[in-house]
Length: 233
Image (tube, rainbow, N blue to C red; front, side):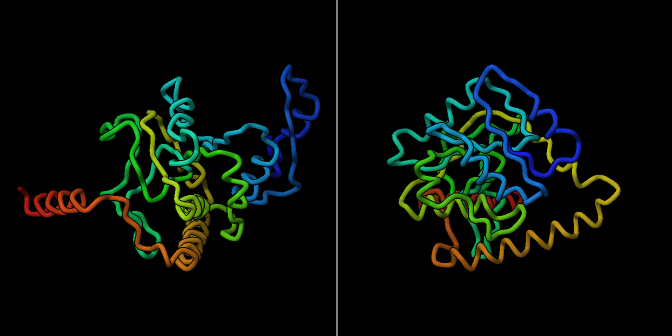
């Protein structure tokens, strides 16, 4: 449990909480940002596999974690598994929208139970602890929030391992923090942080960008489908 500078009595609760299972609690005096807190959480956890799931994500299938771990296999082929990602990433680090793969409830089913992607989104990131340690954890140079998921994906692929999206249906109830009375200010700050993170990512991984995990036949078929859709065929 990482307490990122909460002010709602969380610290007092966990100081007196006596669960029947091992619990490690660590508190930050201030909010140090998501990326740093994720690294703290990874250090506190003791499992062979670590899974980072956004707190506004609701899983719809009981076997979701088993599917993610199964996708990792023995660790020699797949390094990172998640629930949302893109098969092609542009030179500036942006996802190509038509290549996005996900298993959000209510959307179309994935083409296969497991699909290779160029980058996995931070809504869910599952990998072996040994690999995360080898990479050096999440790159905290990105700052408060953005960029860490793309960076981790490319660090995994740099080691010759694949990134995949697994078909395990979920609901993502994000965006609520941007709808309050400070939303315009928060949105502007968030946008600037996103721009800085994307620029940093593009510089750091320029030797791998643009990136596309689709094979040539699939790229051609996707291009034909796109042209047909634009022509109204």
